[in-house]
Image (tube, rainbow, N blue to C red; front, top):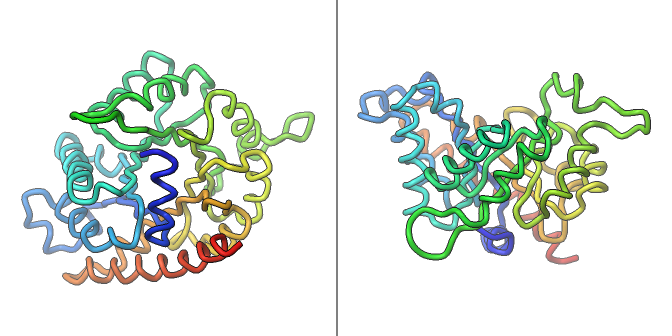
Length: 287
């Protein structure tokens, strides 16, 4: 998916919501455990219920890899289902890969070639040669026939966990923090057409600092909902003229109910977030 297509979807649906598919078999409704593939059954119901309110889905690979081959099959089936039934959705594999060049090249082949997702989260700690294999392959690899799909690399920049203070917020002798150095340096490797950054929603006013370094890049923003991030604050400091945000909510939507009405309740929660987002999008469209 190109940047233009992503922006068009956001404006058309008045939404920049990403639903995180962090599917924990211990939390899904008990009646689904009778299914041959409970994880996929849950995901399918959530996707069918929420697709009209969101523009992206983000399966977290840890929740699938924890179940071995069965989990990976459920992940592949989920991606394929979204591709076939809701082709306008942006699919993010939240895998946080990043290794020496040879290994990164294989990861890129796996996610962009074999799994055919739109985007992959990547850890930049090992530097340029661990990231560029994803960037060099991302615009050209595609599965099936037709035009190659544009793929994206989403670099971890500023996360919302307590441990982020250990490294990300440390300053060098010139007062530049590590997350700022990552964003500034990585812009030499690519541009806003196929690179985004992960920035935790609980950082609030820190989005002003992010935008000083990366004024046009899209930001993937986890932390809305169960983690307590403020959508209004994220938009106030982080939104650009073409939105520039993909805001993720996982638990607050997919686990809003553990009864047989789980999909309907998930739809209600997604709609609530979408309606808030529509108001924020109206502001930039009017300006």
